[in-house]
Length: 48
Length: 276
Image 1: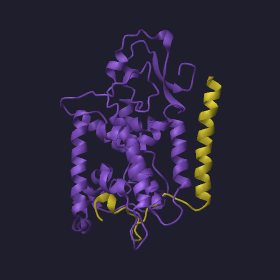
Image 2: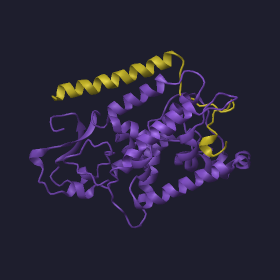
Image 3: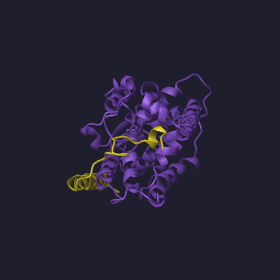
Image 4: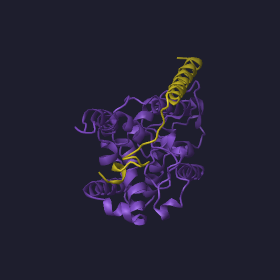
């Protein structure tokens, strides 16, 4: 595959990722993890 | 040296609230709504951002819609742009393992051919399938299998500092903490002898970025006419890869050992070009 085509594939995947993330953000998603109301992942630190 | 500085910089970028290591508090501001590029525990007192794997798993185990467009999109964009360059330069867990590997112990520079596929099983089973399918009867929530049983980042950057500084959390630690501590000590021991053992065999974030290594924009390029075929590059590779033939191998974390070892400057950091 030519350099141009490979660059286009990578750019398309990158833009797809950005659009997906933007769609998620628009839908109100974020990355916060809540455990029993607190901003913490209890199992991550060995509680649970 | 440049890579070391980059790793220190990214460690501080992931964990800017260093004072929380002493106060035993966890940052819970707005930045936690965003993902960090590397594996850095959400419950680390100093962490500013969310761990992408913890967040992804949290959606799979939740009772709402199970696929996070936000986190998935972020990982796809990061993968397409950088691939495993993130592992080599930006990941705090990778940085820690690099520091441990500097200890003067015998080194086993092994290829881990088949074992390196295990990280894809960890991603599929412990991050997606088990948290989604095994659920609590009453709450309907799944269990964070990867974070609870495998991830050493939570133990090293989260549990151990909190254990030292927060009396309330110290009182709550139980059997799971003992399991996690045993796993973390086992992985630290492996890191003394085998370069990036956790990243190569167990890390689900590494598995995701590995899938993008062949198409990632940032990469290591090989200039064939300049190459003297001296094999210094493959001798310098801690993962036993051959950078001439495998510069986009899924396990290559773009650490740059081969780039530095090449006297002919035939290997260089770059973007997509004719040579790859």
